[in-house]
Length: 77
Image (tube, rainbow, N blue to C red; front, side, top):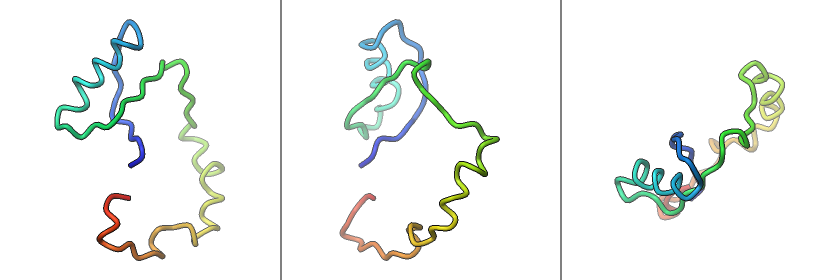
């Protein structure tokens, strides 16, 4: 399964960030691995760029998953 963002936390270093993330975000034993990144290293698009950034995908409807039937035995996708 792909990684999912679940939240943010503060820590003095990477090792403590992984321990804190483990304690906070994997309480239900759903975790497989944890990635931590310093917030100043994260780049994000601006909500004001939504149109120009995502508009090209509207012309590629064949990529939308609604066109495909996924068998039940495939599991999580």
